[in-house]
Length: 236
Length: 304
Image (tube, rainbow over all chains, first blue to last red; front, side, top):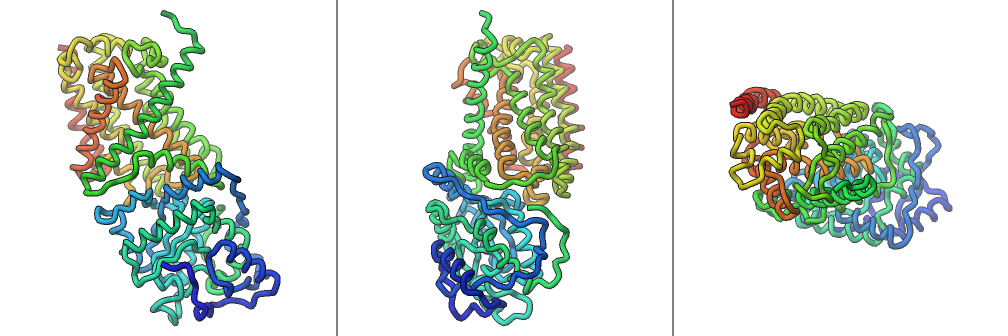
């Protein structure tokens, strides 16, 4: 499992960042302990079309012990939206069965994004799937967390130079935990869940707010690969 | 002894609190038992509390309209309303709730009130799966209402009363005076209806998670869902206590109540883990034939 991003893999569709914005994003990213300093900067966001009705708002967490208590509850009640985008879906099945039994950790499957708090990207994401990923992610309610499985979500993996898959998922939606492997075994996924629980308990599971904060950057990246957003409008 | 209204409300709040916690812990225990059948350890015992806290602690929620708001409120009104008119402990002033002379009829109504309200709310959610879930749920509900009502009528005829407290009183004096033994047909019909009411296997097609994700509450999230989960535990406890009162002689203290309701719940668990799921037309056909006929036999026994 790794939360690192390789330098060589930043080739995807990244626009040229402008100085101040790049610095601020870099600070946020470093403060969250997610990626290295060469995280791609903000892309051009001149197009007003957002693919949705309204912008998300940053929802500030409470302070002190109360938020810690809520984070403890959130960390121990992870409802998973298993998005079977790639081969990772096949490794999610055994997770709930008797051999691995993820429900011991408070992990439960949920078939609808509205009720889920963890979004699992199960592998490579084609551009067509990316639309559904973005939409499902936006329909989830804050706070929400993303686990990305397999090398395909980190750097494209074996689909690195494919014409219709994106290489780095975290340019389109924020990712809390990466789990490496091709495919990661259920044990690795369980370790990823435990890592995510640690992140949430320590108050670092605020990626939904990061998405709202850098909404333009994410949208600009999404629009670079999604040329036709032929999906109906929706509210958050 | 006449109790003042304020004191009565305080007592009802206390018994509601106990029923809520008991419902949650019983639900988690049963989940763990089901998990053991599947060779797993299952959730932690306090997991449902965490789920409720987490859902209520979500920072955002969206609305689809006024009925969408009212759906969970109707649901919890149905759950709390059902519970408040069922005496929890026979002969206890504290746990007798607001039971009165005709409470069986009111409870009969309240059990289905929540589902109807939920149907309206879920309909406004606009998700096609909630519409499918609602239509399946209402169809199945209409079907199992028939044997359930027949069983209740049989009891009312047999004991010549519409008061739950008097029905319990008539069953005192040993196991053999329970309705289970004085009118086994009515009991079996009601218990089959109870399986449908709990929406566990084999009648779980309403919320079938693999086919129509979660069913009616598919669009409910955040604190709406927290409210629905709170209701689920209260409503489960209320139904179990009702069945204990009507067919298994009621309870004279909390320990007896816990033991009896545990085993009544175990009936649904045993049947649930042993049987696969009926399709909705199969379950309707089943409810309208087998338990309905058994219920009619129960009515005949009562009239004998």
